[in-house]
Amino acid sequence: MIKTDFLFVYEVKNRELENITLLAAELQRRGFSVAFLNTWACLNNPFEDYDAEVLVVSACYTTDTYKFFTRHASRFRKVVNLQWEQVLRNGYAEADGATSWDFAGDALVTRHICWGENTKNRLMAKYNVADEFLKVCGYISLDFYRDEFRPFIKTRDELFSEFGLDTNKTTSLFISSFAIATMPKENMGTAPGDFNDVFVKNTIDSQKAVLDWFGAACREYPDHQFIYRAHPSESDNPVLLKLAEEIPNFYYISKYPVKHWISNCDKIYNWTSTSAAEVYAAGKQAFILEPVPVDHRVTYPFFEGGETVKTYDQFKTTVEMDLNTPNQPLDTTKFAECYMQSETPVYKNLCDVLEETFHSTSYSCKNYFPTNCAKERAFENNYIKFWNSYPNILLVKLAKATTWNFPLLNNRRDKEIPDRKNLAKLKKYYEGRTKTNASSQEEIDALIAKFRTIIG
Image (cartoon, rainbow, N blue to C red; front, top):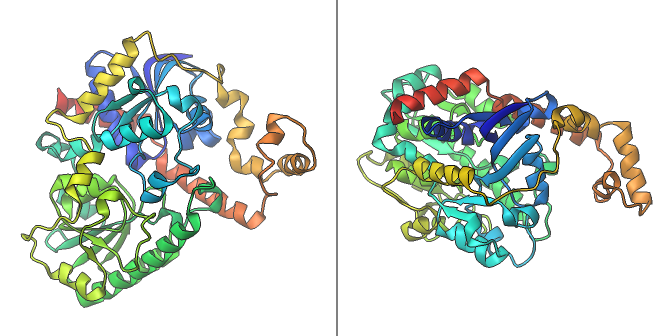
């Protein structure tokens, strides 16, 4: 068993890895030891057996989410949730009934990092999370737009040359938030208060219209480069692959965290992505595309009230707009409620909380899996193989035919007998996510070393 002060269990590489390696660099500078595990890489592969004082996780909504992330450490004393998805769409934030983003169970006594007062107030008022478990620190991704972190960001020459982009041409970046359009239904929320039907339709219709605009603009402005930057959870889309193959100035790219693209592109387009916060911090010329009316539930509070681009002619105007003309469509008041602004870098605020948690005699958390899950639960970790297996099909049938109170049956009563076509799609999705999110120790060490040269 490997002992470490902090174990980071992360999920989405592009969203999290640079952020948590920055935290690791600062923690190491303060004298602490750190280690990392990726949930997707652990799904089908053995992983190290860790004993951690503090487990730092990506999410913690309920006891089930808590169990999912904490199962990756055999021993730990405390848990801190970095809460990478906390600025909610209006429909979730305003729902009276249960949603997939509700807090319950062990999440009510786990420490949560909040980007702004908006999140803290919501968790206290709606779920009665105690003030001591909520720490407003700001959003660490915004640190990368500070002057001192400019050396970390890839240069335009470095980034563009890798993908055959011309550094001398005006380049527009569209940041996709269309992940749900290609997401298997098994991975969507299922709570009564969710609005998946509306969300999926709005997403699919909007994506089609946006791609029509970009396809037409690429042909009308052949010297202008257009990049479609895929969402970290977005599966390969054959329509996008075909566009990139047929149109020389259209690029479909998912590699590298979005901060590198925001920093180096000239115009930034958005639909309903919270990366708008980073665009705002970068001070870039920005636009919100709304080719199809967006249901109030689907968007975010700081998008409302701002000017949106609703027609192709309006879109053309933005393409032709002089780069020196400022444009920022967000509601800055609502934005400030969601993202705390501070002179102190956020990574330092975060590490203060992590260090305080480490030394505290409070915040002890429950450990449901005090042995190495990699060995004991390898069969269940291999989700696709197990879900597609005859034993699981029999368990689903038995669960529906009986009222026996066993965990293996209880968590299958609301499941459907596996559909082979959907399972094949799900298998491809999981394989893609694992490939995209797994990181080597060498890559992690290189990032930490780079940050150490910046922060000292």
